Picture 1: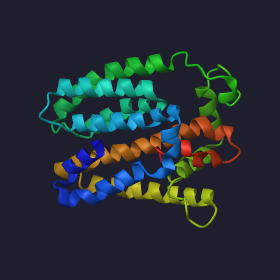
Picture 2: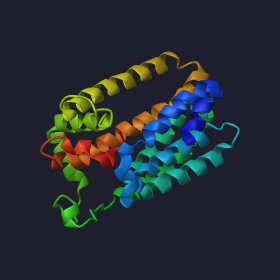
Picture 3: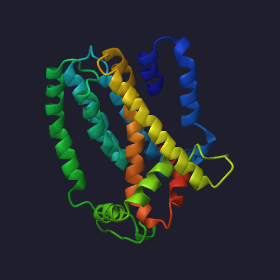
Picture 4: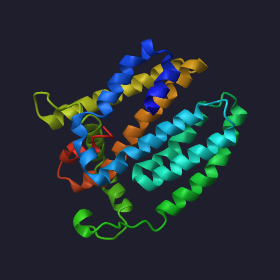
Length: 259
């Protein structure tokens, strides 16, 4: 529903809306996501995207007062933080969209929103990462036990960055690589590179039309959604790539919603 409303805001009437809306529904709820629906713990994975799209809807409603939009977006981001680690990205993506002018045509109003946003963002991120420990039992924590895992994960990725990048790119197109003849890992990695290239071209097109506020207002929410997927792919790669001999874990059905 949220994505459909964002499409309506961007494209206008139903005549231009029905096909992309149908495609999005097909991708979001295709049977390949069976683990998302059957594993209760995986229900959390979809919640940050729900809160992100809700934030984009609220943020782009310019008739609403800025402080009410700030409050609602902060509540969405705070709730997303409790749902899944990917919810942390909202604390960065929401102000990024606002800083790009989404919902705030005037520079002064953007600065006011960003300054007010920085306080809850700093508090939540500090409390989240301060003394962060792995609470999972050792068998479900790749044998780490209750230790600080973030430093080790990022350290492992920095030692072998090519593996982390490959893992993230493979995850991005893991679903699109299904049913295609050939090694699925290679196909997914190649399509992930292609997908990242298409996203870069989209950003270049957005930059060329940057001064056209209507075009920027229409495109920015979807740019944030795509960027969210890439950020989560990077987060999963940081936490999982080092624990895998190869990038096979990127093809796991549990990550279908991110792909």
